[in-house]
Length: 484
Image (cartoon, rainbow, N blue to C red; front, top):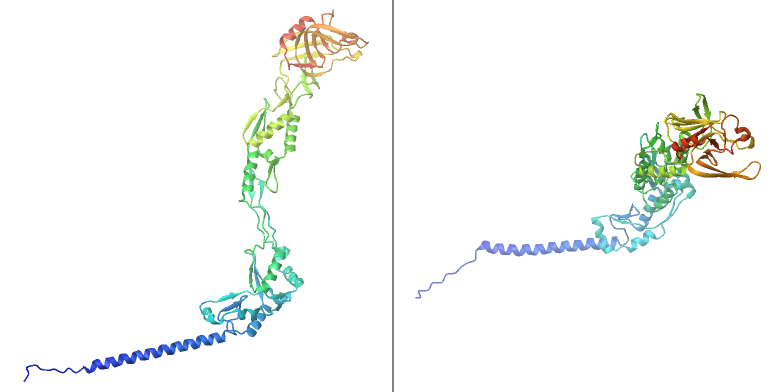
């Protein structure tokens, strides 16, 4: 008998059951999957079939929902929707509505809807399940232009009482400087542009027009923040910002913003210029107020009489052209300036508006046939003279004159009243009015009285030699000579 022992092993009954169960489950899963695939294919195939004649889900044409509809229904829905189309106008102050029915809207769909449906791929119908798709077709939409214009004209936004016109910013003269007045936006609607846009939107299905976003309001040309405006403001304030102080010795005249602001012109396109005619007028007024040349002056004679002397070329006179040029330049600089005006003629002093002679002058009295020389109020010489002969048309002219110059050893020439000419040598020649002047007349044996009538000079003031010498010593160019 063998020592080897054989042992038989029998499979466990629970393990066998598990294996059978796994095989069954696998088979069931495959069947289920197959069923799902078949169902999906059936659904997909059904969709392909259905959407070959219908619009896919979530389809919009010109903002009209036509999803799940066939062409016939889509066309009717589309036509009905556009026929009752209302466009909302969002304005600044209100909202108004345009009704398609009120403007005689007629819609001809044509083949647009059918062509669009034909162009769609039914095999991709499922893509519309995840979002809407928008399409735009150009329709043959007509409307009555006259009716539309009438409807638009009746909108509240076009009523006169509701309309505020836009206004550009501008610059005005304030109390102490120029300042910007802000623009006015207004609410004036561009009517033609609005009518055109409404007409376009009637065919596209747009239901809302925002007038501001569509730029349908008329706007100002210039705004306060525009550089051309701020630059103009700065320039205007520079021109009117400086102060010019005129020194007239006894008083001053101040030119500042209160006056110069009226000289600054700012055009509609913000070009800043100066009104030179007004500047000229100002200088003319200064001249009228402060010029003394040729004016009537009160004068107290050596005998104490108070008279008025008119005429002559002595006095102050502003040089209009040069003063105007200088003033314009200073205004444009914007700086403060203190100075005297530019003069074409100057007097020796300016104690007051009526006294520009002072206390140094030559006084000639025709009626008394006398001459006086005052220097700083002191009489340096007084003597009789012979003036021009009025009986021969050679009278010495009255007035206040400025001594032209002085010259030693001059020869005076000129025509005689009876014919011929004269030539006279003088040691001291001091002209003050053209050919009329003060000089020595050594050929005369006497002076004063009524000699000048019948035996007077050719217009000069004939003086004794010693008198002429004293005069020559003290007088100078511009020295006042008063003849009365």
